Amino acid sequence: MAARSGTARSGAARSGAAARTRVAIPQLAWNEVRPAPVVLISGPEGVLAERAGGMLRDFLRSEDPSLEVSDLEADGYRRGELLTLASPSLFGEPRLIRVGAVERASDDFLLDALDYLEQTAESTTLVLRHAGGQRGKKLLDAIRAGTGGGIEIVCAELRRETEKQDFVVAEFRAAGRSINARALRSLVAAFSDDLGELSAACRQLIADAPGEITEQVVARYYGGRVETNAFAVADAAIAGRHGEALIALRHALDSGADPVPIVAAFAMKVRTMARVSGVRGGGPQVASSLGLAPWQVDRARRDLAGWTDEGLQRAISSLAAADAAVKGAERDPVFALERLIGVISARGRDLA
Image 1 (tube, one colour):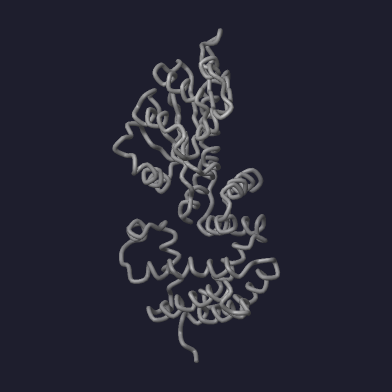
Image 2: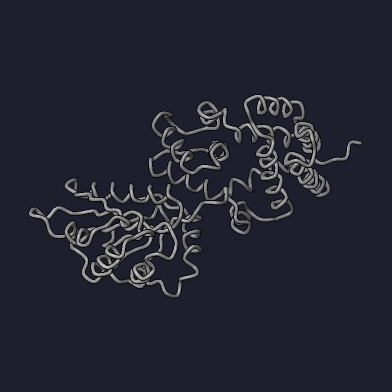
């Protein structure tokens, strides 16, 4: 039903680690959602929760177009509403009951929900959205203990770039589309601070751009985004193209880019290079051991051509200095960026 992501699965497992000994139901990633009598969608990441809920609704509707969908809010709930919605209909249509704000649930809802778990309704899927916190703990514990025959969809916040990249890959794969590695990196960089915008960008590209999504396609749609410009600067400098990197920097700054994310783009690439440097083995093996995607290892190895360990050390020191400079340690952040580009373009060699 849904595209699968190894990193997303491991993230879901980590999020449930604290309660693993008490959990008797499957804990799945957002893109592994499947029907069950009770589906608990937990965690703070609203975009993932929305996508999981939407995928489940679409799947149930594809199984039976007569699906009846009802929505409740647990914080404004009145006693008996859940049981009324779950009661058998005249024609026996399948039902999907979605309950939001369970983390703010009224006492009436918690009582009714606990009663419902003891005898779930046939042909009914109950989806409970809980964004976090201790409210409703008794209900959550009952579900996780197996009462009601449920599953849990864990929607933890995506913090790492690789997790966001997995999200994008899953979005395109679910739509039967593909995005190449450079385009994937550029798209995630362009919307790294807002998963909602990243999801919307994926949907726009899926709807409007035919064929494989390439870096050129991403640049055409979102080339003005600050972080994309930042990676253009970093790519040119790491490749040793000093003049091109300075031109890209000027373009980025003229487009409204802030120096801080530009330094962050450099840091992301150089630190990945440093991690990969000197590690032997095939791309997938190295990627697994370092927690990276195979394409990141391959790209870092290409970027490392001409670099020495001493050069990497000097580049990392220059990054630290530039990071401090653009955050207020120096008066001229642009000069600090130009100085950093000089060091990186020279592959960390001392040209004095």
